[in-house]
Amino acid sequence: LLEGGTLPERTLYWKIGDEWAVRQGPWKLVKDGDKKALFNLDKDIGETRDVSSDHSDLIKELTQDYREWEKEVSSYAERWPD
Image 1 (cartoon, one colour):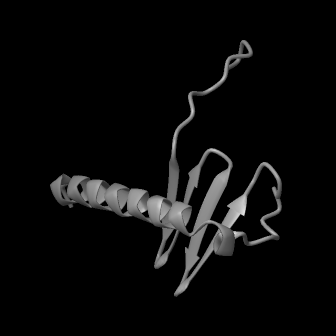
Image 2 (cartoon, helix red, strand yellow):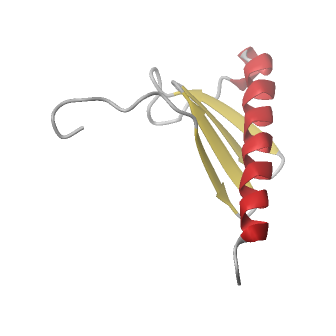
Image 3 (cartoon, helix red, strand yellow):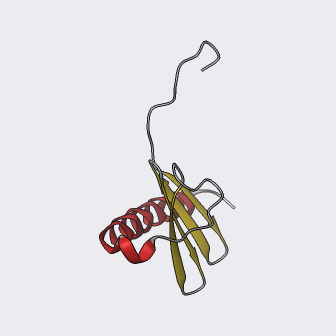
């Protein structure tokens, strides 16, 4: 990276309390309470335009990806000592 390289594309996940988010490519899905919002960060870096109504299949896919990540992280946490 210091010499001008780039990171490989990867999915990023966040969780704070009951809120969570997942970013894959230009897409970021945010869940806050019962509401989910989807943003295309290539077109809307400020996350001002929720496009979830146009991409229901993508919301399902990203939600499933998040659920799988959450299970994986939980399995690691069970093995960590107190």
